[in-house]
Image (cartoon, rainbow, N blue to C red; front, top):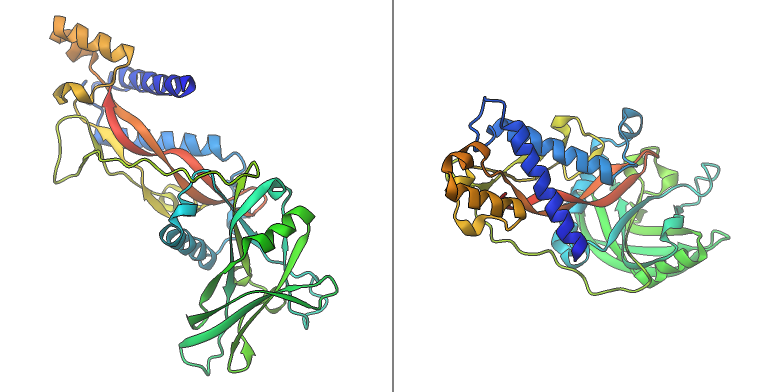
Length: 364
């Protein structure tokens, strides 16, 4: 609790210094920064936060160039649909997401044997699996219609001798040509791979007119067509009750509905436009920003930090001093977002990055 108060105090102190430094330029009124400068400052803060929390992020085209547009779209769609369909899991900040891309266990020496290998990373040893999804790419023959209404998909484990093992799960799908299939796998079954610290091998059957349309690593040279295993895990071996994000009812100002006082405004960040192509998803998001004249806000919008109390007291004595030193409009509450990015090993990683969304504004 004390740590949280200290963080809020130093965050407020940072914005006070920012006001005193940036507002002395003379190009903007002393009670607020110019909108363009505020946006630049907010983006710099977001960049700093990403660099601090994602030290393994790739910053060169050598790694990011391996992720083509088809693969980017796959992860972007996964992120959107997962939040809609499994918000209780993917909205939990304690849940960590992992993507494991399949490989050919035979290293290209036997393309007649279809098998997708998934190497379990060491970091998964001490985790509990709460969700597992297999993303499968398909290749329906051109002689078929663009849409097949009933495709029975079966997922089997492959034994160490490459014989067909037990059926893991089955489901039916309506798919379009070359569409991806996402099928849920039973978590306890996949969890066994963690304890064995082994590579899991799967075979997928998705038959259309007698042809298995599920693409295995032996059948493609494109990274964008490889199967991907998505895992959601928690640490400590105990599945604690999910933490929910706080709900905010802070009014948001717009270009058409402005407020002269300190208020929360939209600020859309498009990662590719600012050169951050190592971030795969989301391609853009609303970070929000705070701006406006704090002198026009009511008392209940003010923070009760020591600086705020001193400023209000001094303002009552001499309004000229308050005009000269002014309150600074800044974010007081933040939320995280889930970022899918390319790490320095060229792998796709997922992380919750704090401080990315401003939720409430205050003056201090």
